[in-house]
Image (cartoon, rainbow over all chains, first blue to last red; front, side, top):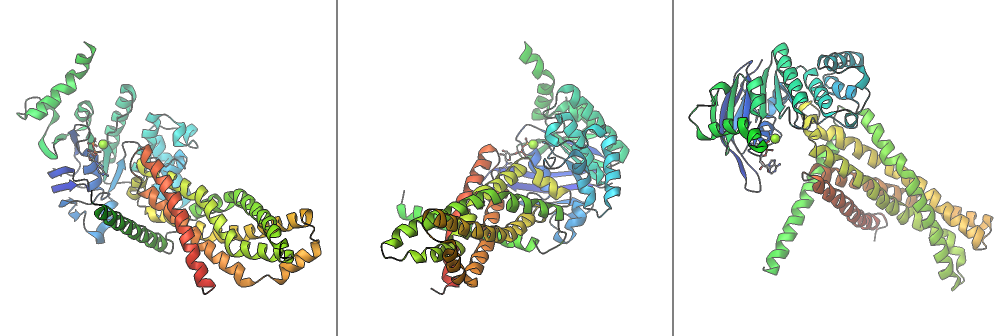
Length: 250
Length: 257
Ligand SMILES: Nc1ncnc2c1ncn2[C@@H]1O[C@H](COP(=O)(O)OP(=O)(O)O)[C@@H](O)[C@H]1O
Ligand SMILES: [Mg+2]
């Protein structure tokens, strides 16, 4: 288990767009933390800063005390994570089984051992042999999500990151994936950080939630306290999440 | 708008882009020599870039040989120099047209598909996924393509040279009243190793270049379908331009002009 500390993280792009304006946040060891925010507010950017896919403009991120900027400990830093990408990001030139084996192979294990681990993880996320030899494009979105999760957990990370885990799925499949994620996080006993715009997902998965707006974390606390937290944006977000359907139907 | 400022801006931007491509090429080249090596990927790219290019490249070479023989024959009969047809075919194919045609055809086929494939991988976050699975995208995606391109282009060109010369030979002995014996003798007598070798070395450079452009524009493709489209076009256009420039430089270098 690991903890994550965001220390005054700022990120702007060459276009001049300042997406993150000073994020400070601590995710404790073993916690399941959620970052909530509107679409386009910079949630994915924050995750990519954490994964050092984007370089920070200012501030720092520590995972178990290791800085994201520490080039010498880069390998050790990166080994702690695994991520479930928003669009799954399965390698489309490989079969489902090869996808699940891919990360394990890089750890230097023998082929048979990799295969055993991959099959075990694929079965753990509810996929059976019939899809192992299919390509990602040949299976449904929900199955792709499961396969991507199998690939992510096969490398035994200490931290699991989920980027919009239910987006693009119907509510029933989304609910099933949510359940699967919660069970997985509990069973593996890892630290989890989820980003989503969906309050339902947050309520279901989170121990604590943080709300991101305008490049800042405007509130952190338990999702059940959101309704009357005193912050106008957070309360609006909460209300909108619960009424939006009713308004549309009326 | 101040035209001089605009000109200056574009010049600087072009220089910057050249710098970025050069840095990318250097990084890609380095990753070819540092383990781990992804043998399966290397083999796959050798098939993709080398083997599957053979039909179009061979076809181009054949007709290039045919046309050179026909045109030189028409020109040279005016000076009663038709005897030189075999030699002209031999030299133009091995020195210039073999490598340049192969380079351009493979650029059209391979640079575009590399840019599109890597661009799509970038857009769908597959390149980010590689990094989080502890795989260096340069080693997994760029190095195998550079290795395949640089090794396979000379082999393609060698085959191309043979097919091109055969094209010239066939048209000459069937349509142009050459005897098989004399044509072959002339070809043999005028064969110079340096012509062939210079062409093959050029081919290796072209192979490297066209792969680098494909990978560079794929990696830097902007998000969305249009971004990938632009990346594909840029890769082919700049690979072709670069092949022509390199060809002139290498010709000057080899033949001391
Ligand atoms: N590579 C990039 N270059 C420039 N701008 C970017 C890049 N990636 C994201 N952005 C911008 O950052 C903002 C936040 O995007 P993102 O983090 O993807 O939103 P979301 O919260 O929905 O995940 C958007 O306005 C987007 O245009
Ligand atoms: Mg996002």
